[in-house]
Length: 271
Figure (cartoon, rainbow, N blue to C red):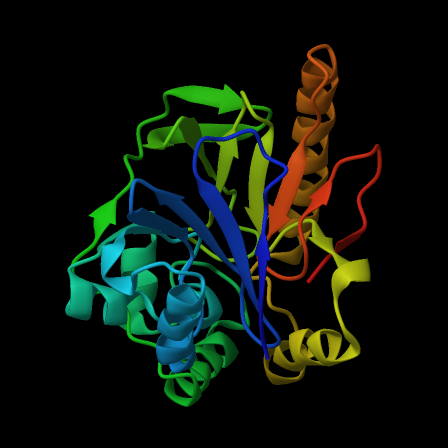
């Protein structure tokens, strides 16, 4: 089942939509002057569905110019190469994704004891979901240009009148994970962190629990993941405090389930 939401309560000068899938990750769509920017790309299996949904929303799939990938799990990167092949779409991601893609192992470069399980899981999921890793990639810079809480800001990029900072994860979930933050408008894209559990259907919850049966945990380092989650909560708390002086608040956009406005607590799901 494909769901889409037009996020029209944001004071931004373009259309911003969320495409949500019953299985797989969310895709965030920005439309400005006919050009489309996507955050994440969903399963490769959904490529034709994604194009059809764009068309139903009166958006031309051929105008997908850029895809910014949060991390190289199949439910977030799977259709990126399909867009690149058909439309010449430019794909951006963290340089640590190279090792994962080259070795087809989501735990590549870590010292986890579950590396072999992660390898088998990566290959299995990629085959079943028709994941196609992008062949030509534009990598984010890895030079630290700022700090947000405990996270390094390694790059920035514009989307319309928004200016996003690229925050580098500490690697708790998967190497190469990044977060996107627009401080001015309080938009925080947390992807596989701070997930709104109340917005997930029973089917979605069951689907998201499956990887644990295959490899014990979806996180390559559960201790670091928990520390990161706490640090992200601190970042959002402080940013929200700052925004409230201007009558605004933080909006959190996870990679699964619905987005939500920060109201002093986190209805999140630790994966």
